[in-house]
Length: 256
Length: 341
Image 1: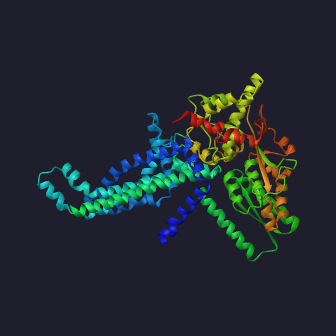
Image 2: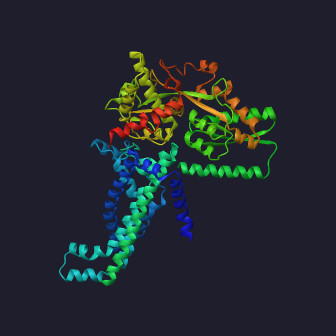
Image 3: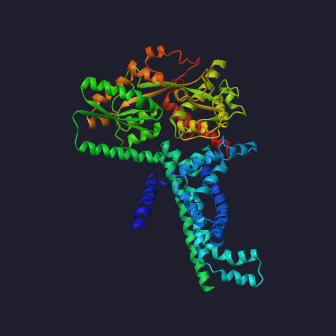
């Protein structure tokens, strides 16, 4: 009931609104080269972010569960910080850290790399904003996992790497995928930090959410709706296939 | 962030409605000003307090002024969607025109001796202190070693003025050199300059902030924005190019809202006051060029007239410019699509 009111109503409203202006005109708006480029950039940036996040997130969860690091409680709280910070502030922080006036920014600039107002800045912002997803998905699974299996594998002669790849990773996979899918969907729609960090140059550093914002502001609601619907569909597909995957792996685990 | 402002507007609107329905203080008048962000300082610190005193002397009543400042286009859309501003003070004619086509403004707002405008300005080039890149004119801005900043015309009225200035200055140059205004050359120049732009912020103010973080060699913006920064004691040197556009900012009483609130008299008095010598001098001190000819003459030293100043009519007026530069097949829109990724 709640889910229906909270989620379905707004999504239904935007879909209806889009349909009212006619499918053909929407298709036209989506085919706009700037819209397509923005969508492509969003997808690519989100992909890169997910690849990095999967590795670093899993590693972070691993360290937090398995290694008795000092101040574990503090680390645990730190992981959730990105959720608590307004994303606009995230953007500001990145500009302060990597801007041309900063030490780091100057260092990169000397090597001809621009971080903020360019693509690396977008990936950094997405990484920051979505960091907790993979960690928080993997952590509980790791906590429940018995060390017995790993020990058994080790006594049977498997090396550290082999144990991790063949024993630990398959168990963690559904959790990692779930974290990856959530962060991917979240990244597609990320706006607050990106509008500050990205250059917003059409076809180059303009992502989908910022393109949509521009279309709304310049009075082209149709263009905004068109791309919004595409983002919605992609997010939905990603989350839906995640669900399927999880069901299958659960069945797999049961028959195992 | 702008979403947040919409919410604030809605809240403000709701409060106003509640206020109207409830107790209505007869000894107090209320005005709601919906303005663009740039003149916020001069309205808050000078114009509104001064007018409140005048109103009190004239009528014996207190005047309460509610104020909202947003990017011109967003403000215009907010009013069109129901934010009950009595007075709209915006950056571009097109944003006032929207209110007229929506039926909120029913009078001919252009029909006064100032053609509906309240302030002027021009587009200038802000450089780093000492002008290390030796910027002198538009042609320097397409050099490969120069990075330029201006906001996105999709979201910023100020950016539209900037792009108009770039395009128009190129037209003006070809007109002076060959006797014919060359649209193709102007389009090419605009594309070459756009290629030097690394960051397009959502608003003029955001663009200034980005410039202050150290990005870019040249910032294209309103003259008054640069003068305001200088007034705040910041090093903000700027160059007035020979050919640039005269920016004209319109103001209008929103008929539908003043009729509903019954405060037309106060609203019209306020707009009248803004054109008075006193108010025009305030504007001038905050960096805006006066629309009143006498006051403009008073400040002619502070606001030198560029040699080849042109206004929007040189480009054929706003309706033509909207289509020619920013339309679906417009010159500016097309720059990115031809170049590809």
